[in-house]
Structures are given as C-alpha cells and as structure tokens.
Length: 273
Image 1 (cartoon, one colour):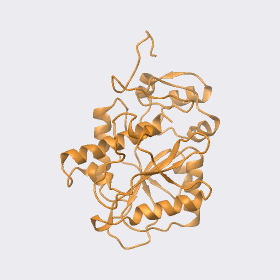
Image 2 (cartoon, rainbow, N blue to C red):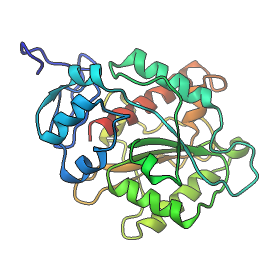
Image 3 (cartoon, helix red, strand yellow):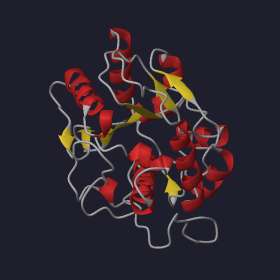
C-alpha cells in the first residue's frame, strides 16, 4: 500500500507473488532483504538510490513510489573474454539494449537509466555495484579462472545474469552451449534445467504460455540455474536471440515485440525475487 491506502501496480491487473527478497520497480512495496542479498546490494547504489537502500538495509518498509523517485534500474552489458573469431562478440548490437530500456520505461513504471553501461567480468568490485547484467555473443568463449570465479560469486551473492545467444549463422547455438557448460562446471551439484512453462518468469507481467519466444537458432528453450531451497532463478540462458528481437530489424513486428516483452518479464522477475 502507498500512503492513503492506494495499491501501486505496474499493470492494473498484475498480481505478483511477493517474498522477503523484493526490490523496487513498481511492485506494491519493498520488504526487508535477506542477509545474503542485503550484503550484496549494499554496494549497489547504481541500482537503488541511497535513501531507498538505507531503508532496505535498516529493515524499514519503503514504498515503490519512493523507490522509483530515488533510484534507477541499470541495464549493463557484460564484457568478457571471447575465444573464437566469430564477428559478433560481447558488444554486438547495442541498439537492442537501448530499445529495451525505452520499452521498459514506456510499458512499466520502472525508473530505468537510459545511459549505456559496460561492466567488466574481470572487475568484481564493479560487478557487485551492478547486480543485473546482460551477456551475449554468437560464438564459443573461454574465460580465465578469475572471471569464472567472479561469475560464481556474483550469482551466489544474489546477482543475476541474463545470457542470450546471438546465434552464429542464424542456426547454431555456440554461446548457449558454452554458457551452459560454464554454469554447470561452476555448480556441478546443481546443473541448469529447462525452465517450465508455468514458471513465474513467463507470467509475471506478460503471459508466455509456450515459454521463451524464439527468433532464430536451435529451439532448446530457456534454461535456468535454480537456487536450492527457494527455487529462485539465479541466471537465465536462452538460445533464440531475443536480444536481436530488441533491435527491431529482422523478425517482424510481432516477434520483435514478443522478445521485448520477454526481456521485461525477466527484469521484473529479478526485481521481485
């Protein structure tokens, strides 16, 4: 509730399952963070304004309207080591990121920063200030040991990586497979699993009854790393190039819009878990 008893929703009929880890972004209210995520987000001033962050750490309830006024959601691109010679690497098509930010602002009341942001996987201090990052490429990749360690610690602390395959030659799944192998190597007792179609991430704002929309490539479906005990998705891996759908240049208006809506769902899922 906001003062006066009026409920805040990003969408009039939106029902969001709230839990102890909620953040800002147009959800009814922000509740106290669990210890692990509170410690992680303590340095995340880029995502949440100081007033809101102070309220979270102190255990006070902070209304979403206040959060929207004092903090911004940042959508950074993750820079990482690419090992092959495919042309589209970690920095491919930045216009897709720009378009998604614009649509996130238009279609929700999330206060999103429109400034481009690059976060280096090799700089963990920089990563912990940006608890949501976007990672893409079209080829195989191999990252050094220190970057692998950063991925694991980032996810264990509550960070979220949205990984999406840029799809080499319009039909392969090199990035998707390599990212899956990376996460499964880092979490050998908890491998990535295909995300069921009834999972909240497919219905939290827009409904996707058949799972993640597919632009091109191998239709494996979206996979997630699920946090033991809570079932929270810690990282997302999709094979179908939803990022190129955000660019809004190749797949037609209907599919491009579906890719944008899926991106919005993923962001709202992160902000509410």
